[in-house]
Amino acid sequence: MRFHALPILTTLLSLTFNPLPTSASLPANITADLGQYLSPGAQIVLPGSSNFPFYDERWSDGGRPIYGPVVVVATEKDVSVSVKYANAHKVPFLATTAGHGTWWGLAAFDGGLVIYMRNLNKLEVLPDGKSAIIGGGIIVDEVIHGLWPYGKQTTTGACNCVSVAGPALGGGHGYFQGQYGNLGDQVISARVVLASGEVVTADETRNADLYWALRGAGHNFGIVTEFRYRIHDIVEPTWAYEFLIFDHSKVEEIYTVSNEMMESQPPQAILWSTWVMNVTIDPVHPIVNYSIFYNGPYDKLREFTQPLHALKPLSSLSGTTPYPELTTLTGQQVGSVLCGYQGSVKEFPFDVVKYDVPGILKWWDIYSAGIKAEPALDKTFCLLEGYSWQAVQAVPAASTAFPHRQQRLLLSPVVTYDFTANTTLDDVATSWGEAMRAAGRGKFKPRSYVNYASGDETLQALYGYEPWRLARLRQLKKKYDPKGQFNFYAGIH
Ligand SMILES: Cc1cc2nc3c(=O)[nH]c(=O)nc-3n(C[C@H](O)[C@H](O)[C@H](O)COP(=O)(O)OP(=O)(O)OC[C@H]3O[C@@H](n4cnc5c(N)ncnc54)[C@H](O)[C@@H]3O)c2cc1C
Ligand SMILES: *[C@@H]1O[C@H](CO)[C@@H](O)[C@H](O)[C@H]1NC(C)=O
Ligand SMILES: *[C@@H]1O[C@H](CO)[C@@H](O)[C@H](O)[C@H]1NC(C)=O
Ligand SMILES: *[C@@H]1O[C@H](CO)[C@@H](O)[C@H](O)[C@H]1NC(C)=O
Ligand SMILES: *[C@@H]1O[C@H](CO)[C@@H](O)[C@H](O)[C@H]1NC(C)=O
View 1 (cartoon, rainbow, N blue to C red):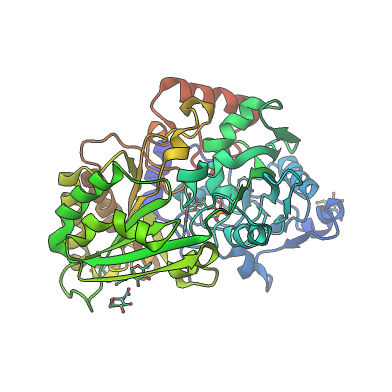
View 2 (view 1 turned 180 degrees about the vertical axis):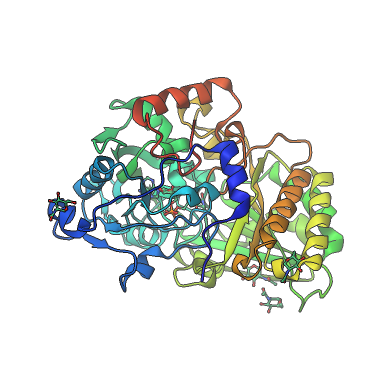
């Protein structure tokens, strides 16, 4: 059983979010009534029907929306018709692709019309060899494996079961961002269903203002049915990897050295670490699992990671793999444990330009103490992602709505627990997460990647501190989504 109403949310929502009317009043004959306007490939799945749980499945209960009827769309027109139908009945609608979103404001969606995008998963390499049409419902796995036979690749997220549209609309991080730019940077044009149900194209020349907003604040502006997306020749198919395990005594040195390594981090190199409890290795303290990925031969990676080896890891594991297997190696392939249902998850992300080492040590101490004090939260881990950034920073900062180009690290406690077992855990989890974030950020301003954000961040932390950014987004919101119908996910108000 999963719980939907979370007490802490009510307070958070009233601060950051103006919920739409949530009482759904869709006609009981919706299958026939809406169905007559849909394409033959579309389907309407009602709550309570035997296949509803398949569509209702989400990665976590963090921000779980309550689904009303689900329209499994098969065409762009199905999306448009569904939006118009919801509007005609004054009922909220919500697009969903892979169901991995954890923004807790999604929980304000209560019984409205769900537009299930997964079947819009076309992938077509265009004759120019530099772009592909990819569906708004495609997932990472389909893009990687769909492009590989053509000798092509592109920036996607690092986890095969996540969508492309979800991350791309918030900027989007992935292994290739240092070489090609972030996910949003790959978008040449987009077909978008607006809040009115009207379908438009957004690119440099058509609806250029919408095109700007889609790449960083896109969840607020429409439903993307397809992208024209940049693709790139595979020049170096091999990725080298190394996992170094360190005990708690090395934390200060690890992140001091990491700051130094970042000064010469090549665009091919990714520096990631996770903090986890592993009682086989250390029954008392969490450990650091430092993962390094390098798009190239192992000796290049090894040269770069020398300063980490000098810190004498407890163990190391290394090798090389073709790119499509990299996700399997990190346990993020379709069907993996990490792709499955996780219980309640709340992330507390912060983006920074480098490690504030004293702050990192405080974060470690709060993590270490909390994980011992609360056995019910012991699946909680911390994620320290150091993607490369060169091609991200080569894109002019003002040219898209993504505001974090200068930040090189994406850090976050990932608080994981079973909310259904004990409802008071939620308050404990939230205050622990907030304490870790506040400590880890150290001297830096709060900035949070919108796709990891939990829901209590300020709009400035999500969309940028430069006053012109929010002013522009608010103006575009009035133009494209005047009633705030896309406000369930990090809504601009
Ligand atoms: C295990 C895991 C791994 C992750 N890895 C990465 C990563 O490597 N890089 C990264 O940048 N992020 C990553 N994320 C974060 C990810 O970007 C967000 O969770 C994202 O919102 C997921 O999109 P979704 O389609 O899976 O989820 P959903 O919950 O279906 O959608 C999330 C939001 O996007 C909207 N949306 C979905 N599809 C469309 C569409 N076609 N048009 C318009 N709006 C749409 C939905 O309405 C919703 O508001 C990861 C998350 C998880 C849980
Ligand atoms: C569904 O019911 C409404 C009344 O609630 C009616 O106006 C409409 O014609 C019906 N649609 C179909 C296809 O039966
Ligand atoms: C803990 O570490 C051991 C030894 O390295 C490893 O085999 C095991 O998979 C780890 N457990 C988890 C949950 O990661
Ligand atoms: C370290 O991380 C890698 C990649 O996720 C994983 O395969 C390995 O089991 C981890 N090791 C430990 C000890 O947790
Ligand atoms: C629920 O969790 C809180 C916080 O961890 C704890 O104090 C309390 O004892 C737990 N209650 C039950 C019934 O497990």
